[in-house]
Image (cartoon, rainbow, N blue to C red; front, top):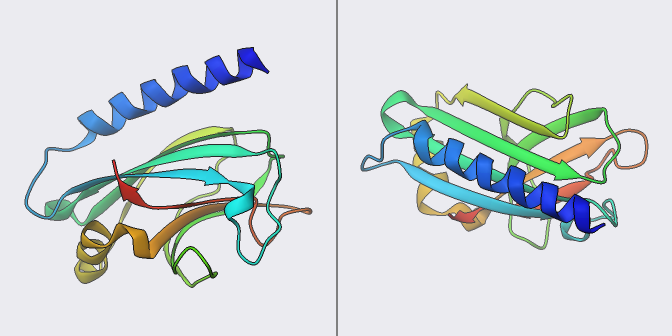
Length: 150
């Protein structure tokens, strides 16, 4: 268990450095983080021992949202990875889809044509969450974390 926590801490530090260097900060840019747990899934249940962290960088000038994610103790393959719009107490609609990760860490960038959506995520991150789905046990969501400023 201790070795897994140390590994996760090292991955987390590396991912944080990647995100910090990903894009220059501008007026509409944002750097966000989400701490993901199965207990956060709504309506649940999520994976009880899974844990993860996602870093989000918004580059407003390029209409680009980049995500670095790492997680542990969930069974792959992942069948969904998305940002949703909803408060902590409810599920919500998908607003930014990502490709399904094939390993327990991934880096992806997507272009979001809806600039108002990117601006709202940057200005109101707590209204959004990221989650990952797995089959067959956690089709509704294995891990979830509300976005917050990094």
